[in-house]
Image (cartoon, rainbow, N blue to C red; front, side, top):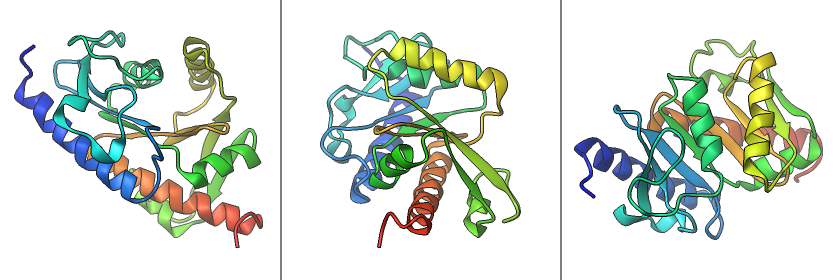
Amino acid sequence: MTYSKDFFNLADQLIAAGKFIDSKGWVPATSGNLSALLPDGTIAITVSGKHKGRLQIDDIMLIDEEGNSLDGKKPSAETLLHVALYKRFPDIQCVLHPHSLNATLVSKIFKVACVLENYELLKGLCGITTHESRVIVPIFANDQNIPRLAALVEQHWDQCARGYAYLISGHGLYTWGASVSETLRHLEVLDFLFECELRLHGVKN
């Protein structure tokens, strides 16, 4: 298959993002998945089972808007969760899904949602200009049936604003943005604030 320049550009960005996320310890073993939307509506996404800190160009594949492989490679089992976000919110250009320790602990402790408010660093999230803000990160029960989990998330969006992220209990975080760099910034902000919440609740010393 012949890939476009747009594909190679986004693939390079996802490879760099994987190295950065791995340097933080947020994608142990082969966990997590990363994706970005191309101008033609196709999606660059990490191949299933690849270590995110050691990604090569062959570890990034192309899928269509339904999550079907366009190049014969195997995408993550959680591809539908990426696809659902791109379909529902056209301005989203990147989705990152790490398994950081802070996100995993928060998802087990707060059960329904993690509420982040009155933190200066909230201003690192796109569109927020004051610490006097409140961000709700919903938490969904883990489910190996990804279509069913995706449907549950979709039901949530039918009733609530999309926010900046969601958590899957005992699993990890999904966050998104208008570019790879913006999504990485959101990830850094959220992980720091999750750690703040954990320390406030006496979980970490």
